[in-house]
Image (cartoon, rainbow, N blue to C red; front, side, top):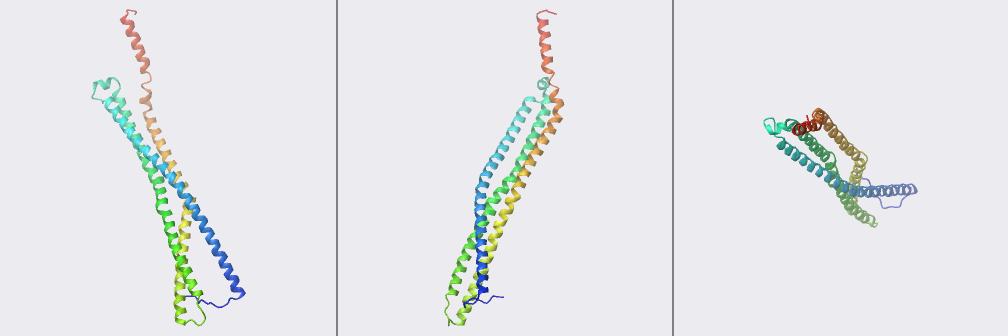
Length: 257
């Protein structure tokens, strides 16, 4: 039901109530202003952070391309089991290394995708959607506030003896303007509260998820290379055997045996 509005004088209790409401309104405005300043400051931070994250994911993509290029060149160099030349210098073992390097490159691409989804996309959504919503709701609130002030001034400027139908029309306009004002104020506070909630929880969650993705990446890489360890260590005696071969070959050549 629409409240009844009066222009008559007010009692002491009504004056106290109006002063309390005014103080509450001022407090709400102070809170809104503080939240808006915090959101704007957070916007600049997010943009800088996003640029760094975007550069990082681009670097991961380039590193993946480098891993695949290196693995491909090693594969070409090592030949395979059917290449007698490559078999002579360990081509079959190099083929195992090639497979491992490609797999590590795949892990890196998965890491890049996870960082982009968990962190980059969230930052971009925060800047382009959530903060943009705050600006839109602020515009609607300012417009509704202006219309409410105008409607209130019209109503308060009524003189005694004004026709009842005119008073009714202005009352309806004031009631409608106030309802719109209160709704847009609620929307603005809700949008700002959403920003505060994300600031408290989502950023840390996103960064923690990114670090967890790195943990899985390095763990998978370690486990894969650990499987390659026997093939890695089996070539360690080769330099010694090669030195002995060269020594005995030279001895035979100079008839020192």
